[in-house]
Picture 1 (cartoon, one colour):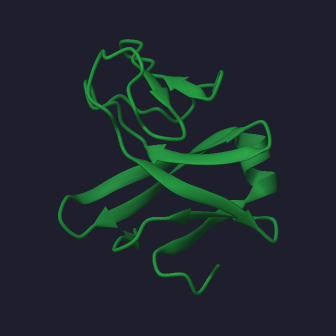
Picture 2 (tube, helix red, strand yellow):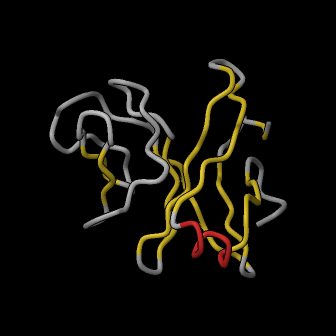
Length: 115
């Protein structure tokens, strides 16, 4: 996993269990600095852009339910797997692949760098 291009070790699974969710700073070559939030939902880890496209309200800190997170600002509902806005309140957001390897959480964000 560590040799996979664009794979970033962001935290331990144990840390994510304690936090529930956590945002990490990245730099996209075209769009600049942004955050990717990592969520633990059951036994799965998910990574999604840490901003609601409608209000840019952070998604980190919300509690996943039924594989979704809800924007705390205006309530838009996003699928953790796809980033799709399920209630059509706003546009979709970006979902990233996230995996656990050897007890570490990795976010796959090709072409990006960590800030």
